[in-house]
Length: 73
Figure 1 (cartoon, rainbow, N blue to C red):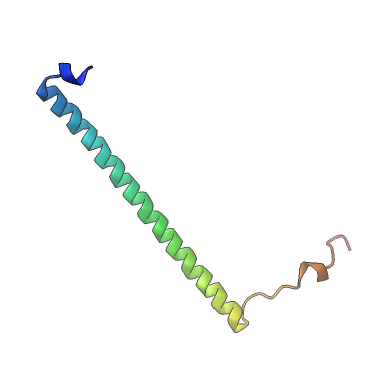
Figure 2 (cartoon, helix red, strand yellow; figure 1 turned 90 degrees about the vertical axis):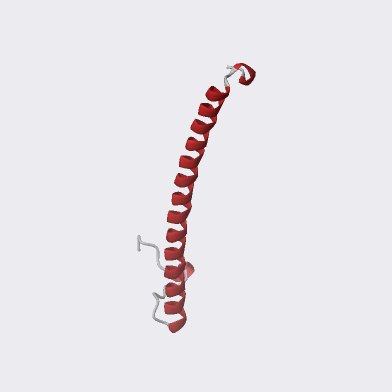
């Protein structure tokens, strides 16, 4: 429907509907960003702990792949 042919009340209802949908989308995007940030924070803490363990010598030490025997020997 052409916006010029719409009554002011119909236009208001259309705009309110679009606003409600936009607000719902924004809320969902905010929740998604929040969850992703929590996940990123957890991964960062894990990486820091792994680095700390490696620097302390407590981390798993593996031989370079060139020095390892292939599994068929």
